Amino acid sequence: MTKFCLTVTCASTRGVVAAIADYLARQGCNITDSSQYDDPQTGRFFMRVSFVSEKGNSLEELSKGFAETATPRKMDYEFHDESRKMRVVIMVSRFGHCLNDLLYRWRIGALPIDIVAVISNHMDYQKVVVNHDIPFHCIKVTKENKPEAEARIMAVVEDTDAELIVLARYMQILSDQMCQKMSGRIINIHHSFLPSFKGANPYKQAHERGVKLIGATSHYVTADLDEGPIIEQDITRVTHAQSAEDYVSLGRDVESQVLARAIHAHAHHRVFLNGNKTVVFPASPGSFCSERMG
Image 1 (cartoon, one colour):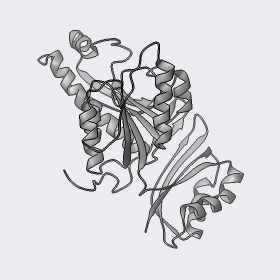
Image 2 (spheres, helix red, strand yellow):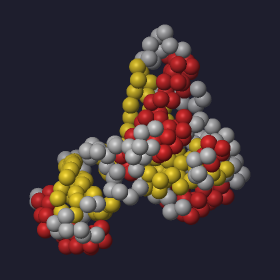
Image 3 (cartoon, one colour):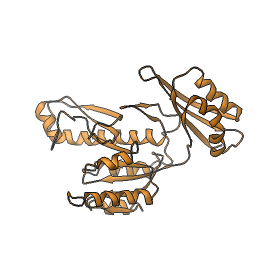
Image 4 (cartoon, helix red, strand yellow):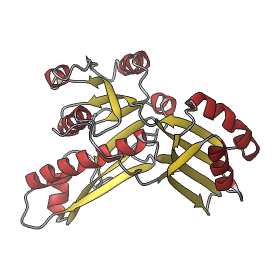
C-alpha cells in the first residue's frame, strides 16, 4: 500500500485533530504516524499525519474529499505521496563538500530527492556532476549580467519542474525578486558564526578569538541576507590545541550534515513556516532508510 501524508496549518480551534482523524478513518485510511503543534503565541496549529489508504483511494480523491472538513476551519492543507521524490536543483560555487555529500546521499537513496540539475558559476565540478548523469549548467554571474544570469537560473528551474533550490555553498547573493518568487523553496547553508564573524575567513576569525564551539545553520532564503527561518543547526567542540585549518575541516563536516538534514526534513514535508520561525516535526519511522548501502 502506498504511504501518504497530510500537512495542515490553521487557526487553533477545538476539534481539529478529531476532524482530521475522523475524515481519514471514514476514507478507510490507517494513521501510521502523527505530529502536531499548537503555538500559543501565534494561535496557529500545525499537523503532519502519515497514513496508508487501505481502500486504495488516490491522492486526488482524498484531497478533493477533504475540502468539506477543511473549508469551515480555514485549513491550508496538502496531501503528498511519500514514495514520490522531490525534484531539486543544487547550486554550488568552489566549495564542493556539501555538493559531494548530497550526491552520495542521493545515489544511495538516503534523501527522498531527485537531483534534476546542478548550477554553478564556475566549472570546477562539471566532471563530477556529469559523471553522475546529472545535467550541469555553468552560469557566470557578474555585477553587469546578474539579471540575465538569474533569468537563466530560473529557466533551468522551470524547465526541470524543480520544487526546491539548494544552495550548497553557492557564493552569490540572490536578488530580492528571486527570493520572493521562490519563497520557502530555497535552502541555504552557512557557518553559525554569523553575524559575529562576517566576511572572509570566518573560521580563521573564530580561531583567533578562541571559540570553543563551531557549527552550521541551514535556513530558508529570504530577501534579508542570512536571516531566513532556521530549519536545522548543529555544532562540534574545538579546543585551544586545534588550528584554523582544523576549524575549516570540522566546519565542512558540520555544514554537510546540517544541510542534508534540512533537505531531508523539507522533502518529507516536516517543515512548516511559522512567521520568522519554523515548526520542524520529527522524522517518521523508516524515513532515514537508504535504498542501498554504498
